[in-house]
Image (cartoon, rainbow, N blue to C red; front, side):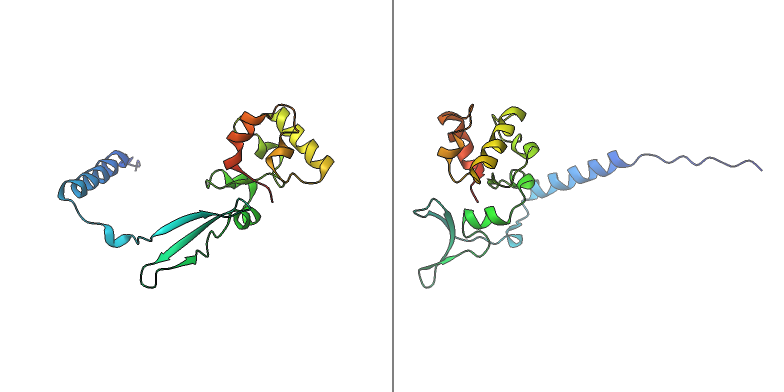
Length: 153
């Protein structure tokens, strides 16, 4: 007895249309989804050493508390894996980054990344932008573009 071939239809398009219709329906009827979010009154303060602190304002006592998650750039710099830092929109710890990770920075190619690694091996660790500018090919313009993307742990 011959086997009957069953035909399976691709239902991805149907699912996509249903999802789009659901989003359209939510938009048209204005469903209020605010109960899914919590709003905090946040404030970013820059300290003398250049670290940024995120504080939550307490409206009752009118006092400020430090956020336990991101209390400073230096803490985040110590804890983040260099390869994932730019993906998470966090500064990259330049003293722990390898050549491939350094090339993810704008204006840094393989040759410049090799020079950064050579400088790091020569002086121990790079502690500020001025030391990074010792690398040939990184001038004030490139350094200013890299400043928000780097941290010096």
